[in-house]
Amino acid sequence: MPITTDDVIEFLHRAADMLHENKEYLTELDSAIGDADHGINMDRGFQTILKKLPTVEDKDAGTILKTSGMALVSSVGGAGGPLYGTAFMQAGMAVAGKYELTAEDLLAALDAALKGVMMRGKSKPGEKTMIDAIDPAVTAMREALEKGATTLQALEQATIAAEQGMKNTIPMIAMKGRASYLGERSIGHQDPGATSSYLLIRLMTEMAREKQ
Ligand code: ADP
Ligand code: MG
Image 1 (tube, rainbow, N blue to C red):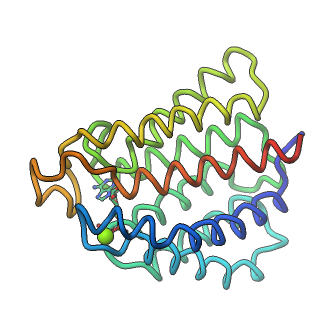
Image 2: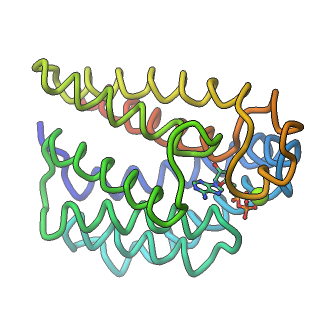
């Protein structure tokens, strides 16, 4: 079953609700190694996306995602907003003009999001950032689809990999962003951005499961 633009819109609404519910949790994680605003940033950014959605509801998936990315960049300061904004804009470019997405399109969008964050953040895996959740998820999804998995099976593998990647940030030393100022004192804490990325990937999987 292809992913429709209605599914993309529903995902954004549910992501906004989910991030609102996790606002304190994400902010608490950021208070340990950052400036205690990641939950506030994500909540504000996604509430701004919701305000923009009525203008793009009948547009292609690329336009919906690009508009969402611009909403994040314009409404959230610091690193997280522009990085997530870039992720959504690049994902949108990967599916420009499409009204229906296959599993391969979704993979292409996630891969473009990953590469966008890496380029904008000058970051790579192992530096205790959101990359550490997204990169293993993209790899797991690609490998699953190559073996003939369904969209749901591939997303389930991506979620397992993202969760492990998120947990793997705990013993890492932060090399990027505010957490890097702490040096070795960043060890022992889970990265907030890796956590929000895991939560977003998990939500995609939950939606795919419901639509079976
Ligand atoms: P800020 O750090 O400006 O307060 P947030 O708190 O919203 O912004 O986001 C922090 C998260 O952003 C970190 O947990 C990390 O995952 C991610 N991050 C920070 N810098 C980078 C970077 N250069 N590359 C990738 N991700 C980064
Ligand atoms: Mg912060």
